[in-house]
Every structure is written in structure tokens, then in C-alpha cells.
Length: 480
Ligand code: ADP
Ligand code: MG
Image (cartoon, rainbow, N blue to C red; front, side, top):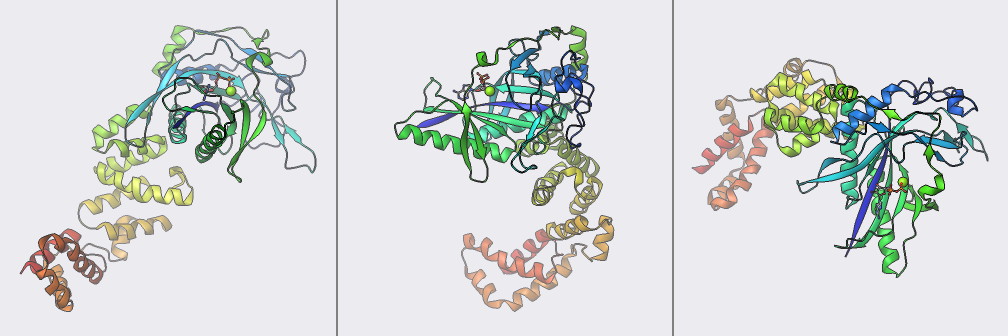
């Protein structure tokens, strides 16, 4: 009877070499406070100089989500006090962001799609980091991250479940990776997400009071944090209470959200245009150039893969979500000329192995060439699915050629029907009771019973017999 309403604010770290308003490096993992210039430290009298690259990146993102690119945008000061913000304000964009309303399409579990509107995307600088676990009883401040460029992407409150929120986040992740404007590494904080959650009676058009769960840093935690928060709010309402608008923190160890601070309002921040920075005025030709340099985006690539490789919408969706995986699949499909088989292997064994080892396709030990050789050997009947898996497992641990492995392991598929017939005859005579039962059984029971014989023949052939041939020969011999 309640339904959830979710809006996400996604912070994406733009992968520039230097910071948004200073020349310091943005490289991850440096010694604390070695990458903070006088500007990042907010020393008096220094002036910020915008990094032209961030405009190009923000515009590309805006174009990719069909958004209005604002030809004039303004940098504002968002004033607040926190130890990791020595200036006392964060430079952000408030009333006039660079990217206006846009939209993306997400895929739902039932195979349908849904459009999610994006309110805006604006540029801002990141703050430093408080380090709580290095000094006993004290907090350290690392200002390396201060001034790192961020693009904050704000969605409309149109997501209806934790799963939809994750689907949306994955689309954003996929777009920024295709555009190559961020490494999107959530574990390193290159993409972070604030989840705004409220609930309302089903069908209501009045939004309920929301809470905002700050800085969730993995897809899995986003799903869990939102689900947990939805349940918490439902319980409050069912007990006759009221949800308090506040900022909360998700604790993955306890799988609960906890209050952080009561919700601040925009006017608490005293936003005003930063007098040190001019309005950003974009030439149409600059926007045009950004448009011309856009790569093929996931949605386009998905449609192309369906048409070009004859694979399902679902498979294409999974394959293109990660640009590197999409490239890998395309290489396997192109070399082998077998789109569907290539998709089955990448979606099946390859993804299973990647999930299990928590590796990305870039680090995967089986090259696209090797997998395409494997696919070709299945296609030409040298391998069946079982022996192919044996070769695949060998490729995971050694660096050999597919054909060499097939030869060394003696895995060439038995397609010679007379050899298979001999084994079939043996199996039938060794299992005469089952054979009699089979022949006495009604037609609809037979296929399942045939499985037993297929299994025996495959075993006897050490997995090498061609399963189709085995099925055919068995069915005809047992039909007598
Ligand atoms: P703020 O800047 O104070 O966080 P915004 O109005 O800009 O507030 O909204 C931030 C995010 O909260 C947006 O993604 C928006 O979709 C979402 N949001 C706003 N109201 C609700 C609500 N009642 N329930 C869920 N999400 C909401
Ligand atoms: Mg907010």
C-alpha cells in the first residue's frame, strides 16, 4: 500500500589531469596533502582559474543525456564550515548550471523500459577528506582531493524502487565510461551517490517527506541502503509516526541507516555568484565541436549489436553496459563470425569467471582471439559444450593456443557416427532393464528417460561424442 519515491544526486569525479581551479594533480593515492596548492587551500588573495577541460566533459555528458546545454552558466559559492573545506565555501553552480533538463532510459527487470528525467547537472569542486582511522583519538585532514572537479547529476524523483535506482545509476556509469570523462571507480570515490528516499500511499501524487542517504559508494550498497530506508520509513508510518527530513548515513555492516544531521535548506548556504569567476559563456561552435567528438553511446551500440550480431535485447543490454566488455564481445564475434555463440560464452562463462574473481574484462586472462578460436571450434563441431568448457578452463590458467590444447588433451569431438553407434550399442546392452522400460513407456515419458542413456554414452566417450548425434542414434536404436 505504500510506494517508494527515489531521486538520486550522483557525484562524478571528472578525469582531468589537474584540478578544476588550480594546476595541482588529481592523481589518486598520493601522500596526504602533497597535491593541494595555495588555491585548493583557500589562501587569501589567490584566484581560481577554470580548467577548460571540465566544460567539454560536462557538455558531452549533457549531449549524451539529450539535455539542454546552457550557453551561460554561473559559479556560485556555497558557504559552510567543515575542517576539510579550508576556504569556508565550495565553488559550485546553483541557479544557472551548465547542463539543464535531460533524460535517460533504463531497463526494468520485466524487460520494459522507463525514461528517467534528469533535472540538471552542474560543475563543482570536491572538498578534502577527513581521515578518522590513522591517528588515535584524532582526525587527520587530507586536502589532496580539494578542488578535484565533480559533475553533480540530479535526477527527478521518478525512481520507484531500489532496483530502479541501481538500474539508473548503472546507465549513468555506463555513459560516463563511454564518454571517458571519469573512471567511474566507485570504490575510490570517483562516483558517489546521495539517495533521496520517501514513501507515499500507493497512487498518491503528493510526495512524502524524504531523507537523504549520503555518499553511498557501490551499486550493491545503493540497493541495500534504499531498501533498508524504505522499510524503516514504512515502519514509522505504520506505527503512526512521521518521517523526519534529515541526512542519514548507511552502515553496511549493520545494514541500517543512521541520522547524520537535520536537513539544511538552500538558504543556509547563502549561495551567491563567486566574484572571482566570470560567468561561463559557451560559443555554439564549442558545443558543436563537443557534439562532433561524441563516441557511440551505449543505447546506440545496443541497437547496433542486436541488428549486427542477431543477439537478444537483453544480452545486448548486458554486453554494452561496460564499454570494455562490449569491445571484447565484438572482437570475439567479429573474428569468429558467430555473434550468438560469442554472446553465450561472454554472458555465461566469461561473466561468471569475472564475477567470481572480481576482475574486470581488461584483466581477463582469455583474450578475445582465444575465445573466438574456441567459438570457431564449437561451430565446426570439433568441440561440444562439455569439451569446450574444458578448453576454456585450460585457457584460464595457461596461455596456450586453442588448437594445441584440443590436441594435447585429446578433446576432438567424436562425430564419426559408427564409433558413436558402437558405444550406443554397448550402453543399451549394459542397461537392458532401462531399455525395456523405455520401450514400454508412453511417448511423453520417453524424452526424460532418454537423458539417462545420453549421459551414459557421453561418459563412455569421455565427453567427446557429439550430443546431437548421440541423441539421434539413441532414439532410433531404442525405438526398435
Ligand atoms: P537538495 O538540493 O536540498 O538536496 P533538491 O530539491 O535539489 O534538494 O532535490 C535533491 C534530490 O532529491 C533530487 O534528486 C530529487 O529528485 C530528490 N527528491 C526531492 N524530493 C523528493 C521526495 N519527496 N522523495 C524522494 N526524492 C526526492
Ligand atoms: Mg541534496
